Length: 465
RNA sequence: GGGACCAUAGGGUAGCUUGGUCGAUCCUUUGGGCUUUGGGAGCCUGAGACUCCGGUUCAAAUCCGGGUGGUCCCA
Image (cartoon, rainbow, N blue to C red):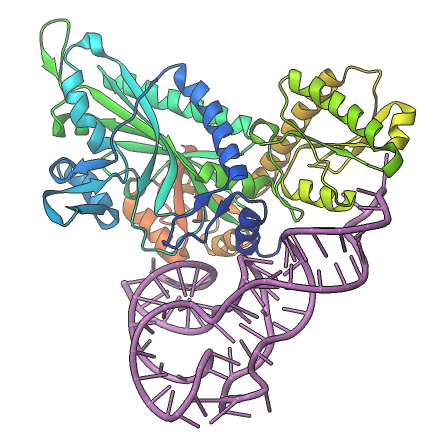
């Protein structure tokens, strides 16, 4: 994988994840295989979200006056908003924005819904598409003009303390989903100039891609009472006082799918975590003319057993050479492959080959295949997780010499340095190194790597997407 | 925000410099047929392209301008 960009672009097409040839810049078609990965991802995320949120669905369009209400927020997005200006041939009285994100769609409704402290906390989420007119060059799933898989949560609370707590809850949910997908991450608080427009503070998840750049894969924001004031959201507390509540929002997108493809994949193609693999086990019958019936009926028997146990199984009985099937199934990232031919039939066993390590094991059909496969799939997930975390941890390098930072980072690492936390100093670092401060990982003391004053944070610096 | 490069079947390419030999090369893909199947099968026979709009010219895949789309670098 010498050229990551090329590899990533090729694999999306070859493994039929998306078709990026759709004739509008920054927009692609989800193909059946990619759509299934997306579907299983959303299902798992939905299970986690549903434990503490209600799912809703807001309209795609936002009237101009609502979008414009929150000045800082709109300034952050004004360059990127698509506008609907006409209905048929008639020009609209009020332009309608296609949501770049849904705060300004949702919060006017919150002001209608929330009357009393009894209505709080309110926690909703939706999985929708959003549009942003990206001016930088677009990249499938990573920098797009239509984000097709944006799962955004919006919560409202009586107190600031509750909002702080909810930010932590949001972070916990994202940790869980990333663990299920075996995606490693760092969690930092973004520097003030890089936080969500209008937020008090922003926590972000980043993952390290194999080309050495970091990819933001989720963000969690504490909005304070800024939006509540702007959108006139008020509740009556138990003493009869009218107050503005505190809000949070958090979201993740297509980039999660990009990162799981990018992080686990190899030169042979996709390597999918079993949880989201459209097919988890593929059975390859080795067919000889005189033996084909026996082999196929045994293959079907195994398929039925596994399917009844809840696995997603496919028999690849196409009339092509086995070698070609192996390559295709590897390209598609199917976690386990079962080879079954006349020779195996005679010995009452099968060969089981795992995608992530290519290791081949014999399994006697006298054993409990469901239990065996179940354990094996978990082992694969654990291996993927461990491998990916090791890779990232090995590439986070602690530094105390600013002059070395460019070389270290451009060699594919994330730098961890001590920083005073001062905006001007931080922007100075970014300018001097031409890199980005991801944000603060933890508190510390000592000396700032740039200005030499007393350091407040361990902060991460990388080249970002 | 600034700059560079690119566009030929579904994918990857040759041809473009010096317009005519192009009725466009090769690999892959793909329809039909036969023989095959323990790591990308072989043979036979078909299918499939010059990004769009405009210009120069007797003549444009080839030269010029613009649109659209893509890639990369720098801020």
